Image (cartoon, rainbow, N blue to C red; front, side, top):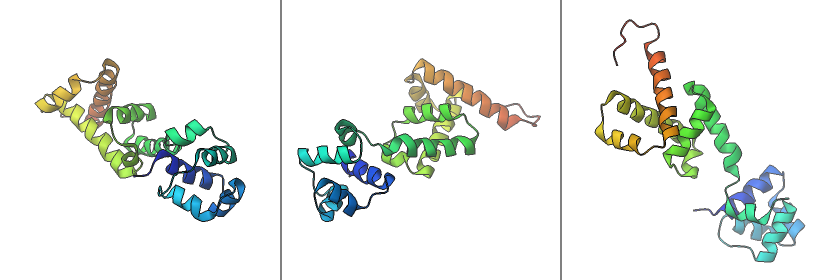
Length: 169
């Protein structure tokens, strides 16, 4: 599994339009070394890590501690799900935070969409009292998450029954 460093190194290098060769020249190593860092086969010395952070114009802490792709890539995936399911973006993001889904998995659009749909479906089962296991999950949610889920179910219920004479769940 790739570390934040290797993931961020490749992401930032590509985002800045740098080849492995160009970055290698900038910090005084060879291209193979960059490739090994990006493949997570080697780790840089502290001195090299500092040089990389300077070359990529990012703090060393950010470079090694968090997956920087998630800010944009995850938001892009959440926006797609939001648009497709006709759910407000902020609601999708809150649902995602309640999923405890690994970030790497969430970057796959279909995984993210299915997880959000399953969460909503679970909430629907809670709302209708059809699943005791899900009731336990619901009771562990924060008050804010419960309110958001309740509002979503109300919206989905209204959409599902729009134009229908049958108002039963």
